[in-house]
Length: 227
Image (cartoon, rainbow, N blue to C red; front, side, top):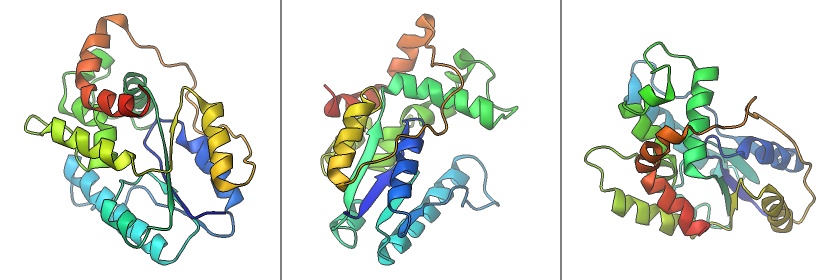
């Protein structure tokens, strides 16, 4: 089976497929650990320190020649061009508006925070909303959107980086992704259900336009793969 790096963007259905892959690569696989950030930092600084540590761990797993490496880790173009050039790169995307709402619901369900707005409408007015809304840009171009971000340049970088992937799936078509993943790995995969939300995602019609505006860079990235 080929060596694979499976980049798992949050709330894109990656837990189920990642678990299936890990079962097939049981003898040589690694998952990049979460929560590695500097405990002395807070907010986005801590998140960025966490992802910097994850990148170091990713490099270590590549150096150890693990056959499957999966996790919530950013794409590293330099690694792909050098030490990980023999790896196949795989990821899965999802409609960005649905992904955004699912991500907010997940945070409220699993990581409640009194400082986070307790309604989706209220959350849209916070700085964190722009960060959560631009996860594709963050994972594939290295930065969230901010008031000073050149989102057009970063969107183009993310699209160019995704063009280097061997397989980009769409959560709206899981059977198609499963077939292509089986073909890529050359082995059947067990269908599992992991980390599934207890209820379907509901997008309030009155908030859709505002969410779409926040998610605009990620929508462009998604549509570059699934017009």
